[in-house]
Amino acid sequence: MDTVQTPELQTLDTKLNSLSEILQVLDQDGGVIVHNMLSPQVVINLRKELAPASEDASVGSQSDNKNVNDFWGQQTKRFTRLAQRSQTFADEVLIHPTLIGIADALLKPSCASYWMNTGQMMIIMPGSTPQSMHRDADDWPGMCSPEAPLCQFSCMFALSDFTTKNGATRVVPGSHAWSDYSRQATDDEITQAVMPVGSGMIFLGNTLHSAGANKTVDEARYGMDLSYVLGWLTPEEAGCLSVTEDRAKTFTKQQQQLLGYRCYDASDLNGGRLWTVDYEDVPVGLHW
Ligand SMILES: O=C(O)CCC(=O)C(=O)O
Ligand SMILES: [Fe+2]
Image (cartoon, rainbow, N blue to C red; front, side, top):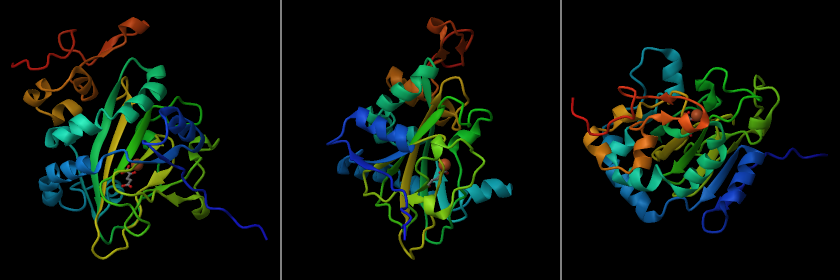
């Protein structure tokens, strides 16, 4: 009798594999686990700098909308503003060379520059139920179809070990390439991004995925999701309202661009300039 093979995500390593190898697996499977995205010291710094917000955050959303509450997770803590809250996030994660390499390869062909879309902590507490399967590109109607160009991709960083029991992200490898996006995934098509702390699961905006259930009694799953989006689409997080001008002034032009402290300038590509102030680039440090 034939045995049904659960599709697995492939695992690569920044110490062993090149950017082109990561891109090749991403293109084929829509997702890939990459070990050693963050050094142990970077993880320690992130956990320390984000500890006050992690402790203060309460589980569940404050919204009255049932869909928002279900998506958020009643036992899940979420917060953003990571570039404000953590210098390590701004310097070691937001501009991670592997992710910038992927953004240049996959998003740049369709835009003059890209934004950070989300920088979110997702702490799945014991008792969390599984999130519903979704494609993150569904945020932009018309941009999530087998025909549309890729508009977004993410990296889910493990700031603690991700296990099947504590809520490792569920993924449907290959679902980015389905010809019918209305099709539901069957259980045997779903795998989980089991990975050690410091790894990242990189996945395309049109790959089906969701948070797993946390079936442990006392083990929180610390995930940090960073995503990038084409610069002519509205990002999920209002980057420049999430970081004070005083802090933005200390950042490089690349960090400012990712956080919306620079305009989207497609004038060299026969396009226009978006996100301007008085027709000009965003004046960082201008006091009204
Ligand atoms: O927490 C996770 O593993 C995934 C969450 C997710 O996909 C989302 O909130 O969009
Ligand atoms: Fe998602």
